[in-house]
Length: 183
Image 1 (tube, rainbow, N blue to C red):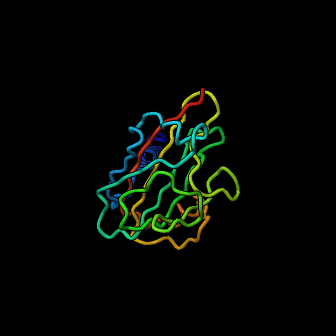
Image 2: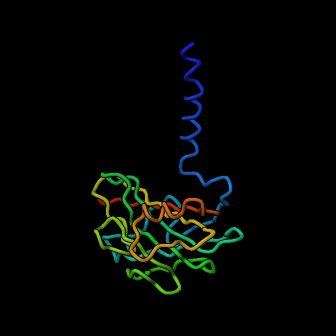
Image 3: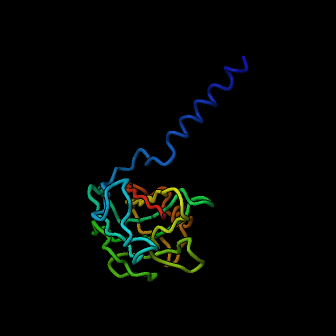
């Protein structure tokens, strides 16, 4: 009898685990890519701490109707201390279909968007590329959100603040992933 009582709870946990990280049912998929590297392949050294450490170019299509702005988060879930944030970019104009290579590390970049603080330091804004410890390759997820609003955040917001502001406003989502390993 006790086994049957825990079955609904088990099913609920399984469904929640499957849904984690998925767009909400009302969110449309965005087609996000980088012309600098293929999905799942190594990120070129140019875009890492071992190279010029400039942001890679990104392009997207299939934005849903009603987009007012976009937000971009770049994260490394394989970092030793947990997920590490490499880039926070938000209030990207709805008219854009790309982010060019080499976005300057300034809190506000006219025509491109507003940048938040990454995990490289308390006041470090803009893109900072892969720089994992030597060993196994790390995965870097570039996640683009299409929003039905502009976020009410000033420059230098943290990723958690952006994620909180995204709630209830995501109408599209796209993801691109690259890897990097230091020998």
